[in-house]
Amino acid sequence: MAAFSFTLAKSSPSSVSSWTLSLPSFLPTTTRRRRHPKSVVVVSAAAAMNTKPTILVAEKLGEAGLQLLNNFANVDCSYNMTPEELCTKISLCDALIVRSGTKVTRQVFESSGGRLKVVGRAGVGIDNVDLSAATEHGCLVVNAPTANTIAAAEHGIALLTAMARNIAQANASVKAGKWQRSKYVGVSLVGKTLLVMGFGKVGSEVARRARGLGMQVIAYDPYAPADRARAIGVELVTFDEAISAADFISLHLPLTPTTSKILNDECFSKMKKGVQIVNVARGGVIDEEALVRALNSGIVAQVALDVFTEEPPPEDSMLVLHENVIVTPHLGASTIEAQSSHCTIMGDCNQEGVAIEIAEAVAGALKGELAATAVNAPMVPAEVLSELAPFAGLAEKLGRLAVQLVAGGSGVQSVKITYASARGPDDLDTRLLRAMITKGLIEPISSVFVNLVNADFTAKQKGLKITEERVVLDGSPGKPLEFIQLQIANVESKFAGAISESAEIKVQGMVKEGLPHLTMVGSFGVDVSLEGSLILCKQVDQPGIIGKVGSILGQGNVNVNFMSVGRTAPQKQAVMTIGVYEEPDTETLQKIGEIVAIEEFVFLKL
Ligand SMILES: NC(=O)C1=CN([C@@H]2O[C@H](COP(=O)(O)OP(=O)(O)OC[C@H]3O[C@@H](n4cnc5c(N)ncnc54)[C@H](O)[C@@H]3O)[C@@H](O)[C@H]2O)C=CC1
Ligand SMILES: O=C(O)C(=O)COP(=O)(O)O
Image (cartoon, rainbow, N blue to C red; front, side):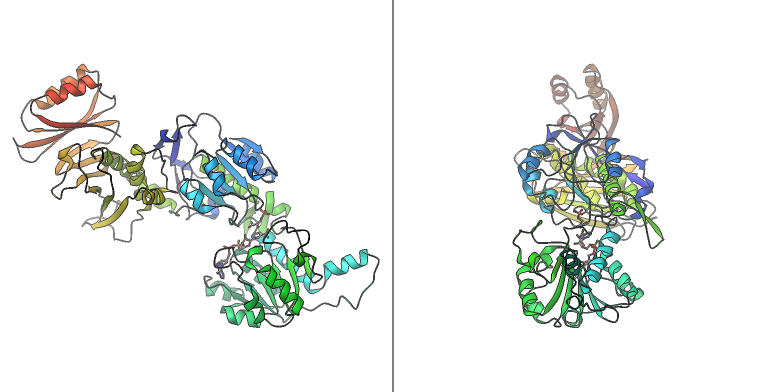
């Protein structure tokens, strides 16, 4: 599998506007990325700086992960920071790694001054990271979604069995010098119905283990595939069926607006009397005050909690102090194996610790590699990325070119992209191309930097309406695209020759031998490689013009790389496209403008 580098290089760490894009770059992927061979995204990263990036590790991370990070970055391990301290430090950091104990708020992103490029969540739940703010700031968020699954599932089972047999209460009682055998009679698990709420990675591992304990397992998860449930002997049921049938409930839902307080007064009232509940997901999925009421009324007999709405919970929490509630301090992911070493899941695949998983994801993102575990950017399969890489370069160049053709004050609002391809309409993932065109359109005229993470958001913010159209061509679908065309409507152009018959600025390009080429400006067919900079001249077609312009550029010490002339008809109008590496000085450009046959010209930086 080839990796695709989308590196944002910065000439000075303090200036956001000086990001440039290096494309394409194919790098070998590391073998560790094998777990997610298909789901990868392109990220922006502060990689191409000569200085090492700085990574702030705000919570304890396993040694193996720290070692990996230390190999290429300055690592600042500052634990137990106040929110203010975090906001102060963050402006000096390219990446931040947290667990569940750090709130990565909008203020953190705002305080970073644009330098923060990646937030790594060393675990699954990303409810402590403000994803909207991250996306708006073009900051990638990655997590470590698999390394602590088994640890969390085992903790769930540990709490389930401990709860059913009053282990915690009985232990405290014996240590207090008592011997209360009749007080701590438990309930058996075998034959009982366990409801797993959230049949994802942790939920299904809990279900598998509970089946091994002889329990009937039902699950509530409208998004879970029925065949996966069937394969481990679990029945997927509706919410109401689930709630009323369960003897035990184990929660494994992410905290989202839909799952917030999913267990509430109404729900407790429908449960079997004496139900027992385990929560190793997130405190917020239970209405904690309603749970205290349900415990006091006897509907809920026992509860085991690893997670709380507020962590740590207040010392006088009625829930924590309740005699039928056992608690642990968010220990679900806390095993040696889950945090930093290697363990084996069901004997069939090696699982690396969270620390390694997140260190690799953050390091890779900072180097501009693919991020397999991005949570706020669209997933684009790796093979699609490598195929589209040259077209991504073309897309950005066309965007840059088109926006520079707009006359000042016109205000770009409506852009139409046409993708022409011999492939079927559904066989082209255009998100990357759209992001690159957006980047090209926006970066030359603003201080915002655009990447795959924030492209759509930034376009919306700028009031830029981008529509996409597919033209299906005859022929072999061997390459993904024949050409890309960009049209900007309702604007004036500083180069009238770029206006098409339909009164829009129109540019079109294609990839030739791996390089982006401009093939049309307005109604004029041209052919120049999109490298360096361009001079577009519109003139009356007559002999000698090319020579005149060439010699003026030569006198001005400007090397001409490419030149192409497109004309409407011989002796009529023509557009000459000249590719140059050096920027001509004002005097040279003035001399070109003085050639009588030249009606207009424009210099464009790519
Ligand atoms: N206590 C701890 O230390 C740990 C806690 N966790 C927490 O456990 C939870 C689950 O983690 P994973 O299994 O890895 O995540 P996952 O994403 O694999 O599974 C979550 C499941 O919940 C389902 N779901 C989402 N919304 C739902 C809804 N409204 N109703 C019913 N089902 C819904 C999804 O379809 C998915 O199958 C997360 O909140 C995570 O943060 C995970 C690891 C350690
Ligand atoms: O991965 C998760 O979602 C967890 O809850 C684990 O949290 P932690 O990294 O142990 O603070």
